[in-house]
Length: 252
Ligand code: PEP
Image (tube, rainbow, N blue to C red):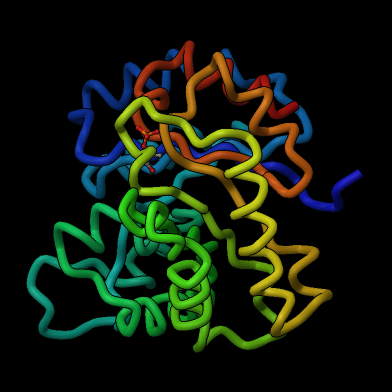
């Protein structure tokens, strides 16, 4: 049996006003209250973080942010810092989501600063990595994953590597309905774990590696049963309490 507790995290992206977020969490909490042996997280927009922390207090649902700056404070208009998230009792943060990399120019160099900053502030980082369709077709998947994992984790001390969660998210599968085949997911995720093991075999056994990309209740159980898959980062299906709770149930 894996020593790692599975994590099912819902990335709400730029969805849900405060009122909508309250309605969603109200519907979700009773549906996941008995899901033992699995960590459950929601990643709402910044403006709903405080309310979601308050609404989930005492429940099994943890609250993560979707991004942060690496610095504690400074002249960075529009940004949010690690201590600001920690003060709200936010538990962790998604870093390097492909939408941030592609649409907002987030670089591996920035991520190499963000990862240790998150750990330093007591936040659990979920680092997203993954290839585009053309990179996969060109046989470049491993090269891309190697570059992202090595560069983004560069500033994380070896002794803390196991605290980082990595989400393998093939970009061609995000929001497209095209889920990776089980063998593709297992192969890429085992490769990601091997990259962590290149730095520390012991820490790689602790590192949770998630699959992300069009996860829906219908195929969650198959993906979550794969030997190296430690959970899922869920986009679209996390916006519906019933769907997200079914995916959580598939991880138990
Ligand atoms: C995501 O945004 O991380 C994601 C996996 O989205 P979806 O589940 O909608 O493909």
